Length: 219
Image 1 (spheres, rainbow, N blue to C red):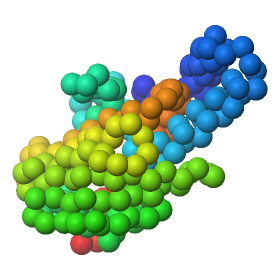
Image 2: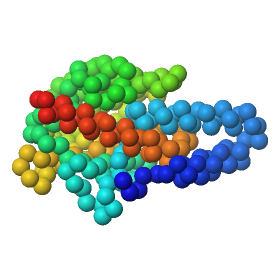
Image 3: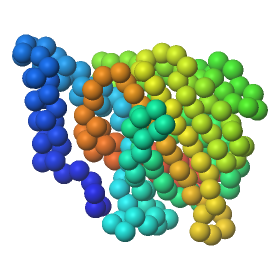
Image 4: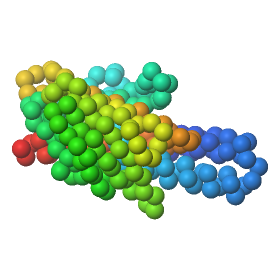
């Protein structure tokens, strides 16, 4: 797959991160602690925000590919946009994205999920994410902006400075095939190695999309 970060590229990026840490602090032990915190947080975001697999070189999505774009929202927060296809009805896809009882089957990074309240307009959901020895808690307001077409979310409490994103269900190239656009914007409040997160997240999203396809095929 073209565009996937190679190990030496990740190494160079991490080296630059360490250089910046060294500039900000002359204390090696502090720099080492910060670097360790960065790597662990990066891993947690792999589980939390679902990564990406880069598409073929011409940028055209095939039915099985996943396209990734770097995007920035109106607040200047960097994020990711992933585009892929699902073979299912709008109703089935919408049900998969709003069935909180089965969320952990699809999104494996979630350790606990609590529905605070839900109605036809949306849901307020509290998540617990665990990566290695680190545990993160946050609450999202998920708005059903256009039923069977658009879901948006935003952080209302808990860890991290900002979390927002959306799912869009669009018409696909043929009957029964829908284009899915996923966007995620995250500001954790401190530096993370974006290249490392993207590289590891690529493998995670591929698995996540595969699980979505399996669940939809099973009905």
